[in-house]
Image (cartoon, rainbow, N blue to C red; front, side, top):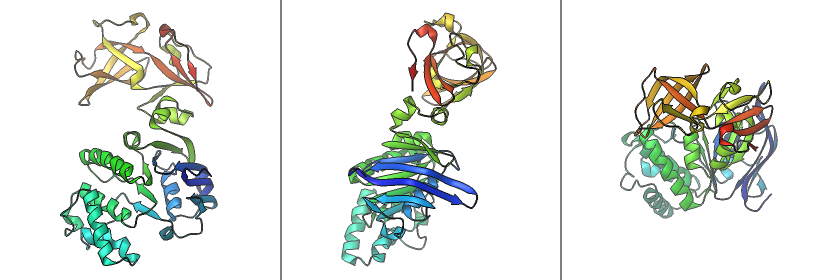
Length: 356
């Protein structure tokens, strides 16, 4: 094990009766990193988190924290703080008592508890709220208190299970920024589970993508987005759509009969018929079927060759209408042939493809 790794999972297996939840899980997480476990529902990400926390026991394999195998050590003795998605605050305890709970379990002196709670209230920006009860707090405030309670005993590892799932959209965005800044300031190794790609990309130093109980890929958000290692990651990351007859698009050739392609909105340009296009001879004609205002951009759903594609236009561009015929230029696409993923550029760009 590398000295820089705080968490190492070796060949973890976990079954729930006939359901194989974790399949040969091997993960290394460096000290001080904020890592996201990202995947669809049922992909095994929460099971991994619960095994690290000691809430589930693996059938086989080792869980190593700071160089020590902890399989047989109770979760309460692993030096872990856990934040649940529904806060799990004690309703009949004040904010002060909620944060102090873990310290009192450890029989910490009241003078030290008072100092620690005061320090954490300042850290989470909730000074003056120590006498309030959870019902008197907003969702964002309750989640911050849950963070503080998990941090109170000074854990070496912080685990968060869908920490923003129960919070409204605007507060969720604010808490993402706050969490990243807080973890960076504390330098505590942290793992959080999420199914929200935007959340993982915005917050995490590294992302571990899970699927059907396996780890598909681990890397920085940029690495996963630009260099997917498996067909699943290529299709899962980004607002992607899979197409089979990709040779129907101008200047693309079918690599093999069984190969398919993945298109993302940023691979596509949509122009009105009267707008100039450098590669107009390589564009296809499509019909706009839906227009969605996204605030900073306009999302277009365009039907072309029987496929409904998603693309973006600037709010400053000339508006298009539903039913309007437009020119669609596909710059590039990921071609999936078996386990091979190739980023293929439109032939009119005259650039070599990159094989991953």
